[in-house]
Image 1 (cartoon, rainbow, N blue to C red):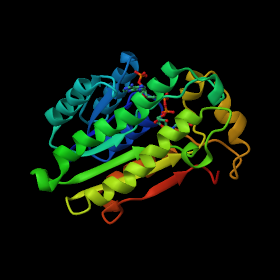
Image 2: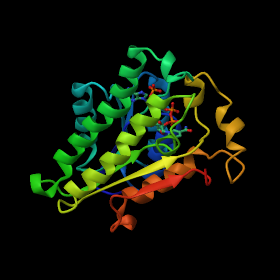
Image 3: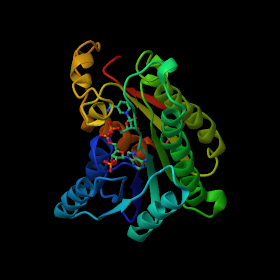
Image 4: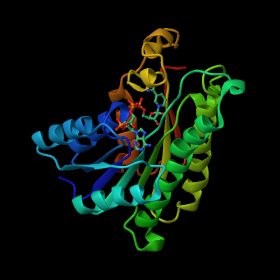
Length: 248
Ligand code: NAP
């Protein structure tokens, strides 16, 4: 087992869960963050331990600074921090901008933008060799929506994800000489529960068929890209945005 921990925000379900399981198989000790669904987080932790790995669940809202600090404390109890996957994200029911309430937009940006920036800041503070850290990686889970704009669905979500792409660019340069690689993946339509939370459980299957590859993606296919970017095999990759979207 590596003597390194990884914090995965939203590591209890969907893409984050697949990352947690794969990272553990690669020897990482995994802090599995979740917001509400304790049973799902527990299931991931138990699966990792059953495979001989080390994991802890940590409840917390990425939009709340104190919760983010607690997530890092959990990861650091497992082993010195080596990587962070900035994955937690939300959507909302399909709407045009003219129909969106301020409350909806505030929550969208609080979780997807502020939450990601807070998580990345705490990661940089701990990993940066300039600040006494040992180096490592930060990998963001953006979305193809950042390129496509998500008209008539959620332009708020698309803009929030575009902010992450810009942060990958800027932060990768800020931390380029500090031993921290910063990258992002942009998943397309992936089969997870997020579509149900946006009111369209069949969305990945319905629209995935129209992707050039003719199908939606599986969370494990995104996790393969994330865990590669996160680890030493990608030692000269920083500032990259990798589309994992079946050509969409
Ligand atoms: P998901 O199945 O809905 O899982 C979301 C995860 O994030 C859960 O573990 C959830 O925990 C956690 N979470 C939600 N709000 C949180 C908060 N405020 N603080 C901490 N954790 C929170 O989603 P997914 O489809 O795997 O999506 C993961 C990431 O991929 C998101 O950033 C999403 O935008 C992005 N993405 C997904 C797709 C897709 O088609 N699925 C496509 C492009 C990008 P609880 O269960 O406890 O609430």
